[in-house]
Image 1 (cartoon, rainbow, N blue to C red):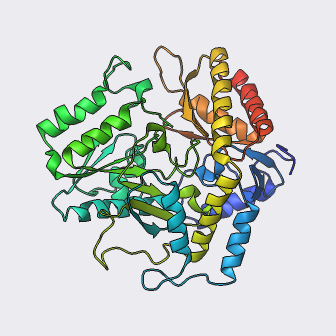
Image 2: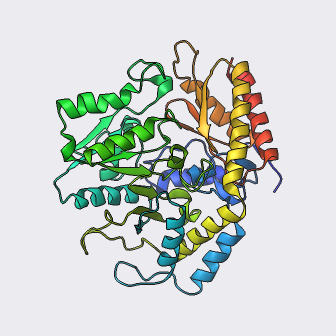
Image 3: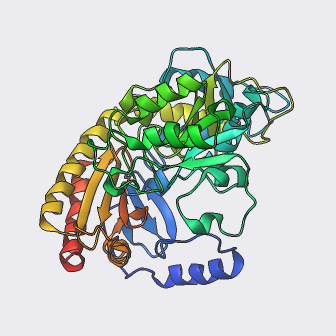
Length: 444
């Protein structure tokens, strides 16, 4: 496929027909960024039903980390489908989940013995993690702490931790009880109106001095659930010492750390898991999205002593599906063999550098942040007030779509830059050329 190539202004005639049928036949509980109707994809290129070709800068919501339709993924799926499609590890056994477990243990942080539980989605991994933490303490620690602006899923338990947009929670109360939210370290928009590093990380002191000392005894807290880099909340990178201090605080009170790597994991940040940037070992890690390159699969990987729910207390019919597990094994092999962690780091550093150069040209680029190929570019009306440039952001997304670049947003007005880890420098330069041209007309 040539890239990008717009042969008919999207949405074209075929896409428009699909849009009408979609509106009529599917519950519209999701919000689409623009009317893209995908026909096929390969590598980092996507083709719509009318023949338009796009550079993929969102990886199908951070799922297609090794690119679309990688030959080794297709081969692994094909070989497994010819042998076994399903037989449910909830009641029986087969080999692929065990083979994948060994590979996962080799790439997840920590050298202590581990166990894994398989599900189908990120939300399911979070739900299971909550049960594992509460079950470990046998109900004696019912509370869970999460961070404001976080996204952990939309099923009711996961939704109770999610707090990135009111629309996600409105109308669904009562949610899971005993969940407390504390501020995420969003230094560009500090909720305490402090400046890093002069703040001395008051957001951590707040937990101990106000939450624990005023109304929540830490002996009742089972776990702190967190995203090492906030995803839906705006691709926010915490200060360097933040997670280390959270780890020490959790250890002080015997609280488990549950690391939500659903979006940041599987190499997206230039390391297998984002928490590795801070040399912190969580107790439990929730993995999904890119784990099986588009096949439904999630994994909860935890220290053996915590992964000990009673038999019959938790299961998932399709979790650990043999095809998904075989593909996930292939994904890990591809990331290793093709040095994709290194490419994510290399291309990510280059993209951040280029966006910082654009920041000097365009006043509305308020903040550029990220690690590897998980990059946020926050747009503001002006840098003094930091008023979110919501309208401008939407216009950039639409114009990018029309010019052959697929990009979505995070937070209120942040561009979410998350191309496949296989992205080439040539494709990056072309994408940034498109964005620069759009900025000239939009960010004045």
